[in-house]
Amino acid sequence: MKKELTRQQYLDLYYYMRLNRAVEDTMVKLFRQNKIVGGLYSSLGQEAISVGTAYALEKKDWLAPMIRNIGALLVKGVPPRDVFMQHMAKYDSPTKGKDGTSHFGDLENLHIVSPISMLGDLIPVMTGVAMAGRYLGQKIVTMTWIGDGGSSTGVFHEGLNFAATQKAPFVLILENNLWAYSTPVKRQVPLENLADRAKAYGISSYVVDGNDVVAVYSTAREAVERARAGEGPILIEAKTFRRLGHAQHDPAEYVPKEMRAYWEGRDPIAVYETFLMGEKLLDAKSKKEMEEKIDTLLSAEREFAENSPMPPPEFAATGVYCTGDDCHKIQAKWERPIAEVTPPKSNVKAVWTVAGFGSGKSSGGTNAPIHFGDTKNTIEIPASGGKASGKNGAKPTVKKSAKTAVASGITKKVKR
Ligand SMILES: Cc1ncc(C[n+]2csc(CCOP(=O)(O)OP(=O)(O)O)c2C)c(N)n1
Ligand SMILES: [Mg+2]
Image (cartoon, rainbow, N blue to C red; front, side):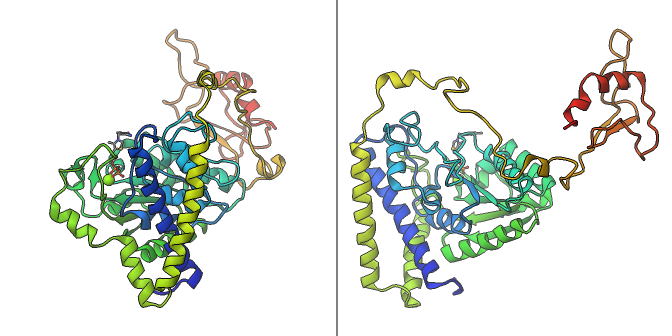
């Protein structure tokens, strides 16, 4: 751990790690009282990753958590009561009791995209959010997390390649906790450092000790700054250990005892506390004060959650299908005038090039209206929505079929 943060930042990191753990401890109690609906996952021993990475983001930035990132939600400003109520499927929860675990977000205020259960799918989604932010001139960075197991999905690779190609301002945190369900990482990836996966996409990466919150924060901060400056996506592998089973149902007896003992001796909160005490940033009195603050907060939040009603039965039949107006309208949220972000004023040269366009034959032998492929003929449609022009601005050779295609609506897309 290096000393380079302000006192407040050091203490914030400590507070959020303690809060993260206390929120999850409370949920274990609720689970044992049968008040949690569905599965309950734990980030015990991984708090430094969720907290340290999310703390590196600015308020305007976007994140999308996975099951072990409650700490990131708390840092972003989600009140513990929402986490409790969501897991208890209460009517006042963000999803009004429609989901029993962590599938909720906040697109309006906190900039949180709801988790997607299909591992890896958040990578292209958050790449898209990053691209949208850039398009709107917002200078945002987006972040999501993925496990060692999730890093072997197809969409991890497709998504990261897409992000790299688009130079999206996106930071991906790979939490290598050595297990995916009961599969040890060594049996599913022939790599020592999963960060090496970044090489395949020509992007930068870091390996960091995931149990050292200051190292995690400093690394994430640097990555976020680089992404914001336009360097493209960055992958951070945080090495850690999943201290409990996959979820509450799993006693994880397959984990070797020595491995567990080693990591239990490196608890991120205990390690950090020793550091803070050594640096005189924390003493017994301020530690107790913080514990009391968290206790008071969580008792009130838990009480609120427990008193919240379950949804009325008839509510289950509503909102099953999106009906448009009474559900939600999907509307572009233009924060800059449309004219400013669309051609010809935008700095993106909107020239659509379709190689081989309009030159093929249909199976019936006639010219196919659209055919991509076997010819070098290229038509470019200028952003101004003017007439089709040739590749070098010369008078274009427009084949009949191409003309037909242009006339049949392609130009409409670029005419503003
Ligand atoms: C595409 C996909 N495949 C399988 C699953 C089922 N599944 C959920 S969590 C999990 C293990 C994930 O392991 P890892 O990515 O290492 O994350 P960890 O649980 O260790 O945090 C699996 C296989 C899924 N949700 N999505
Ligand atoms: Mg894992």
